[in-house]
Image (cartoon, rainbow, N blue to C red):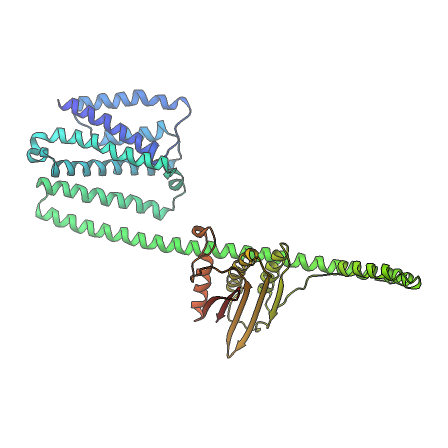
Length: 425
């Protein structure tokens, strides 16, 4: 009977490892003939388990290793992590099911007599939550493989420690229920659990800090790239206008000669048409200057983008001081985010489009007021008003973070079809 039960446990353990590998982690199946080697290996391990009358730890580890490395085709790092996760996950599920069966069902009242049946039932019942989790993950299209493949080493260790901690706690609960843990052992277990929990919490805090810093650096890098792109567009625009002006100056004598001929012939209608043509030909966009190159790049780039969609009235008053407290990256973050929001609001507005900016300095404080045409909208500080709220809103949080650094403030209001942003720093 022991041999039959051991063989059943071996079969159910195989099923669990395959479910975790394929449905939960999402490992890729081997395409070659290598996967057929699993059949004789699986049979040999099964025969060994049957002869021993129990599924030993060595056979269990060999089974999961063969499943991951032969049935599936992944890199060494992902394979090792998968083996660790699968073994501890299966062990944890078995322990939890065992605890439920012993604590809740009548089988637990006579544990020693029903021990083998409880072990088999724990294996059978343990497959169900794994199948449910795998089904949900497949339906939601969640693939752990892609996340584990490029996982950071800190998170790698954190996952392993977390699973080990859960298994230790479950094993201790099992031992205490069976009365197999002495008072001294209990103390050792408690101390070990506390130390392990401390390391897990510490790693969690470190990882969160690292991820937060990485995210901020990624956002700053993206904004720097955007600033560089705005600078490039700004210079291209200046070069284009300069080229147009040079061409106009080159042909001005020819235009004067043509006008002189028309005047001599008294063809005043033709003169008017010619002058209108020259007016259209010589029209150039104004290059706005605020005394800071970074803000100039961003402001002129945004104005140009808006004017490509239609007319825009622009009014800019004041200049930045030479010794401005804000760094170039911080200026880029503030103006890029505020003017991005202004651009979106202006493009949505059906009436006359306006953009106004005032820059004032008073007692070492900088006051910036930006007004733009905008449809009425509900607005909350730091909360995006864009349609894709899930991927927006971080920009204004960065603006708030910079202003808080310099004890600055930002206020917003909507009044008379104008959205007003006031900054003090």
